[in-house]
Every structure is written in C-alpha cells, then in structure tokens.
Length: 255
Image (cartoon, rainbow, N blue to C red; front, side, top):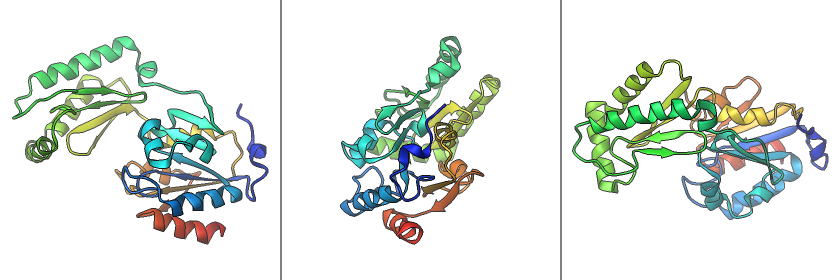
C-alpha cells in the first residue's frame, strides 16, 4: 500500500492534489514552460500536492518542464502514468508488451506489417510501427516521412479514410485483445490497452487519501485525450486553453 498524505504534511492542503496535462495547461505545445508558470507552480506546491500527467515519455517532458522535473513535481506521470515517479522515486511501471504478451504482440505486428505492405498509397517511408512503453504507434506512411509528405498523406487519408479502415480491420482481427485505437495527428494512430488513458495515473494515488483531485486539461471534450480523467467521478476537472488560463484558475482556488 502506498504511503499516505502525511508525506505532504508541510502543505497548507495536504489532502489536495493538482494534476496538469503538459501541452496547453503548462506549456505551449512541445515548447518550454515559461518562467511565470514555473514560479506559479513553486508557490502552488506550498499550498497542495502537484503533479503532471502526459502521454509523452519522460524525455519529452524534461525538454518542456526542465531538467529538474522529478524534483519540481511531487508526482510525474509519463505515458499517462505507465511510467510514474513520486518525490523522485520511480513507482511500479506497466508495459504494453507485459500486458499483451510476446506471442499476441507478434501476431498483432505481423498483421499490421502485412496490411501496410498491401496498401497502395503514393508514398511509403520508414518506421511503420513505433514501439513505446505503454502503446504502439502505427503509421501507414511511416513516421520518417518529411513534413510535406506528412501534409500530403493527411489529405489523402481524409479522402480515402485509410486509418479508419485500418482500425476497423484491427478491431475485427483482434476482438479479444482488449485494445483501444486512437486516431490523432496527421499520419498515425495509437494502440493501447483499454483503460490506459490518463485515468491510469489515478491508480498510483488511489490509496493516498486525497480528498480533492483537481485536473487541468485542454482536450477535455469527448474524444479528446483529457476527456476520461476530466470527467472521472473522483476528479474535479478544469478546462483551460493555455498556461495563463491555468494560472487564473489557480489564483481563484488557492491564492
């Protein structure tokens, strides 16, 4: 069992945690956190417990939030919490391959590669399957395509619905795998175990006795990747458009 909120007895509200999506609520997309937002988080950490939850791996979050991210946040939830840290110490992690198993994973990847091999599209490049800790990312054109090729594929896909048809084929082929397929961006879609969205991070804090869990996200609409945690019954969700919006709400709540 996890240790309790007594770990945070130095806070004004030790039974309250604020969780933040990274892109939007804390930083501009894929860019560095501002000095003003960083200072706000320093002040907020005196008031309550703080953490971030993002879909990217920790290396990308370090690029955005700074090299001391494991010290600057009480909780760091990378890949939706599949890789997690509390007070700088790594918690139990989970992996896509651990969930699915090697044999079923091989069947899935073999099907994907055969499907892509038979696709008649104008351009194919490289890295059709990108293996991540908690998911795989599948790209019919390949993630190594150039920016102009990416734009052209997006137009082609909008017309021919390649990714939508690909997802249906996977759902029909592997109905018992318990996987969710999430189309996003221009050229690819993610595949991960059902339930491994951002609500996964809540598993790490469910025994911590937090009375209030705030979450700040920008993609909180149905179908957005913040929706599940934003609408979770134990979470108080806040929709923000940028870091300034986040700061405004934090001032109303805590300062």
